[in-house]
Image (cartoon, rainbow, N blue to C red; front, side, top):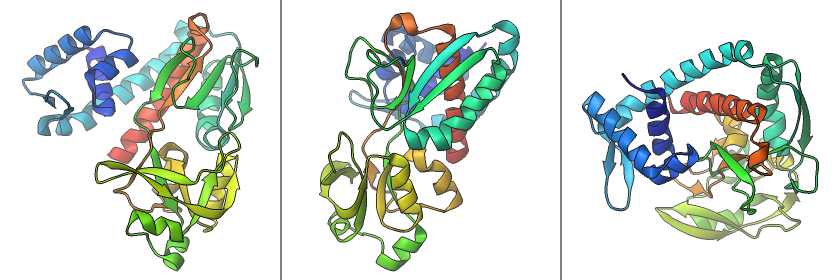
Length: 303
C-alpha cells in the first residue's frame, strides 16, 4: 500500500532537486528518505528519478507520474482540512508578519478561509517589507522570502523552489521591445525594489546555466513590493519580482515574462518562528494550510 508520506517525499524531491534537502524539509534523515524512495519505486516498478553523483532529476516515467501524485495530495489535503475542525479546536491569537504584496494579494484570502475554519483563533496581521525582528517585536510568525540568518529561529518551508522572474506589461514591451540579450536591460526602465534602503544597481540572473550580474538603471525605486508591481502593471518598466507575487497577473496576461529562459534568484518562501517552543498546533495548522494552497496554485500552473 502506498504511503501518503512517500508521495509527499517524492514531490518535495522533485521540487528541490535534492533528496537530502527534501529530507531536511520533512524533518527526516536522508537514509530514511532514501529507503522510502526505494520502497515506492519497488511498489510501482519504475525509476521515478534519474540519479548521478552530482544531480537528481525526474525520469520520463516520473514526469508522467508527478501531475497525478500532486492531484492526489491536493485532494487528500482538502479532505484533511475539511475534517480538521472536528478533530482539534484552535484557540488564542497569532500575530503574523508578511510582505506587503504577497500578504495583500496572495495570502489574505487564504488566511480568511483558515480563520473561518478556526473561529476561536484570532489573527493579527502585520504587512511590511521590512524584516521584523522576532525577538524584539511581538510577532509569533513571519512569512518571509529566504531563510532566516539567525540559526536559533525555525524556518518551515512553504514554497522552496520559488524564484524571481523578470516581468513587464505587454504594452511596455510593445513600445520598447523585448531585450534579446542581458546587456539590453541597461536600455530599459528598471522598476527597483529597495531592501534596507539601498537601490540595487544589478539584477542577478541565470542565463544559459550561468549566473550573471546585469547592470540596471531607472527612475523608479521604492521599499514597497506592491508599488513595484503596480508600476509594472501601469507599463512603466520591467520588474524583478518573486514568481509567487505575480503568478496571478502572469496567468491573466496582465504581465508577461520578459524572457522565460532567464531565471532570477531563488526566493524560497518560509514560515519563520522565533524558536522550537513556538511551533504550536496553531502554527503547524497554518503552515499546512498555506502549503496546501500553494500546492494547488503551482499544480494549476504546471498542469
